[in-house]
Image (cartoon, rainbow, N blue to C red; front, side, top):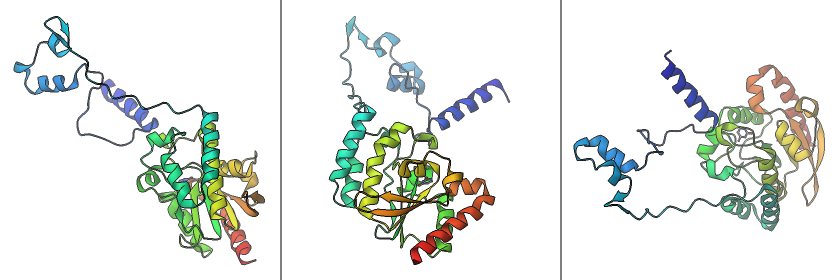
Length: 278
Ligand code: URA
């Protein structure tokens, strides 16, 4: 591979890592160019291109007025301020629809700016079981629904095995926006989103909460140990209105990478079935 090709690959890998995983145009645009439109004109018709001095804004020795700049997007508030705003906003939501609307307009978490859309929930909010994952991935970001990619398909099959589906169970994530490049949400992002998922659980009011994977378990159940220690254990979860049962289990994405661990997840799902029957 030539040096140029290697450099191009490394640059693409960097973009991907940073979350730039979709094309927005057919042609590359040099955003560092002084005047992109003039550069494009010159490329199309070099003979009629204006002298560089003119195209850079100097005409007859006088400055051309600068074009009106688009005001920059306001910077998000500091995390502690955003977390406080999130708590206030979330506690004011009287219904899940209100909560969704609040989140649609909430600007305290910078992830909203890089995500395609909010991924609020899927399934039946009146279901007796609520599953909560970590954060949406690429396909969830595009569709606006949690767990629709490969791990979502596995979750569907696991639910089906114990008689559940998206008509009878409710599904959400701790963080409702996709982090760029599927990176792990930062502790600050998680802290900002926490009041919203807590309120979502309270308003959905399931009998059983299932935390999918370690981040969801640690965030919602306050555990410190790893998921291999906490999985299969029942916890008490205070929704704010009542105490319900919560189970920690392995994340379907982990099970896709470690299929032998599915036997453990199967035990957990049988425990959910039993708890629902009891
Ligand atoms: N992983 C998650 O934690 N949530 C999703 O919605 C998809 C994948």
